[in-house]
Amino acid sequence: MAEPDQPSTARMIDYWLGGEHHFPVDVAAAHAFEQAYGPCAAIFRSLRDFLGRAVRAITDAGVDGFLVFGAGVPTRGNVHEVAPEATVLYTDVDPVAIRLGQRILAGSDRAGYGFGDATDIGTVDPAQLHRFVPGWGRRPVGVIFLGLAAFLDDDTLARTLDELYAAAAPGSFLAVDFDSEELAAYPEALAMMGPAFRMRPPAAFGPLLGRWRPTGDGVVPVARWRPSGPPDPVPDAFFGALATRAAD
Image 1 (cartoon, rainbow, N blue to C red):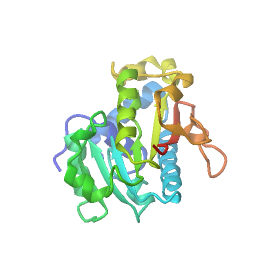
Image 2: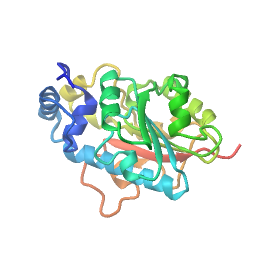
Image 3: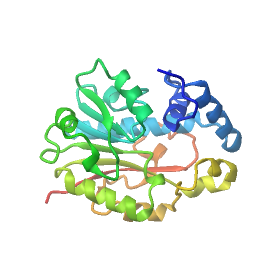
Image 4: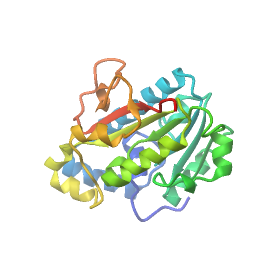
């Protein structure tokens, strides 16, 4: 794979997670962000641990098919590694991430990677959806929607989640996270996130879920969502929830 000349958030996260799928340009960007904000590895490990706990909760409910939006690099505890018996379709809009993901998963018959715009379910390849998320729309699935809400305005986010609710079968699950206003205290780091980046007060998170209903855990800092031990000592910058689609 040719070395890119622009950093990628997905590969920066891979770096922070201790992965192997990043380049010097990503490491430099990660270090620049940390100069403005502070160490990030523990935060992204906490976010990945939340993903793992949410996926295990979904599989414990009997669900064995997952559709992942904004998937980034599909390693370091991503869905198919946490739930090896499940089938998984990873999607992204970044062609570099898609090519990398396809290369990583080339030998798998249970996980695939393709183009998919989270705001338009119709952009997901029907053949891939049928292969890796069999029964989509007819049997419960897990929808992973992490790292995306901060880049969608309220109207787009609410519409997107409602369309996913309508498309998914009753009994499906949604794993979702939100960015709090914590980053506002770090203006240089905030500027690096770009003008589309949206922080929200915690009180706004629940209403944006629309018809999706959070489990009894509610929408809480990700480190405090069903922790396996004492919660990770990380800032309350990210809130997460596991929500369900009720029966019609």
